[in-house]
Length: 95
Image (tube, helix red, strand yellow):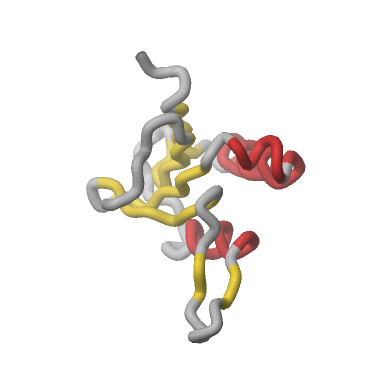
């Protein structure tokens, strides 16, 4: 994985009980909200919100700048994770 995770928030596609979250493309769907289509007609995810795979687990990588740039979306994503019992790892709070 090429993304630098330092200071990022990671929402894992695994519940706190260890079950895989479905549908399997949930992260791509959520990250599509901030994506654009480039001149070569390729989907480009925003650096603020990217789908990633970490150790085989689908995840969403959130840059904390999203809280300032799109506060409603930031709140929605964290509420979505909480309501679906998904693991949230905040790299800002780790030493």
